[in-house]
Image (tube, rainbow, N blue to C red):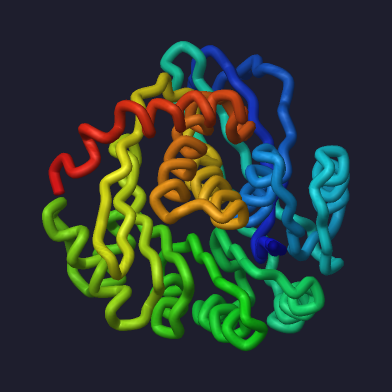
Length: 316
């Protein structure tokens, strides 16, 4: 099968560490680590780590954009890039080693014109993907309904659209209908129009999205508790193993990467969700913006398969 990831607001991720964050003092930091970032790009990186292939489609410009392209090329990840005149944004993560607390600074990107975003879709149409994965925020310059346009585009070219975003961008895309949504509890609440959901209401809320045509599959991210997989056939709680958390950067994108890779491999929805949880959990075990190590994924996946059975319907 063929996978294309779409990142409309990519970033050069920079991460470092210092012993303590103290106001108005010069802080000695570790060497800066550079990573190609942005939701869809992270998904492509995760798919590559699992041995799969995808094409990362994104706009890039300036020196940061050049570094972004070089990092992905060095990693062996296929890219197709729309050149822009503005500088690609950057994000900064600083870990305070004395407390293991991570501080994440997300900088805004420059405006992206609808014409440049549409050029990304033109590239994807030529790729003829079976799956289109869009993850991350929309940059300034694009309407909040742009992912709705992508959802309609995916239907037109016969691709399954997987979306991981938030806010009005998520709501408008759900109005059009996608293949798979991965909301957290707050996002699921917004999708069904309520302020808050109790845990025993989550499965019915997710199923209501499927019944009204917002999507075919819902994977509700529950953080350390794993996820809830919901299809027309029912629901299942996939528990997450307990791990030593080092960072949450890229955990959600790692989860999506694992799920898309699993679908590409012909796995069942249950296996898809289990591999996704294993990838997301493995990503939290690494510092900075490194995503996951495959050996950690398969070790955690074995735990989910062997020991997760007893926890599958806990609290639901």
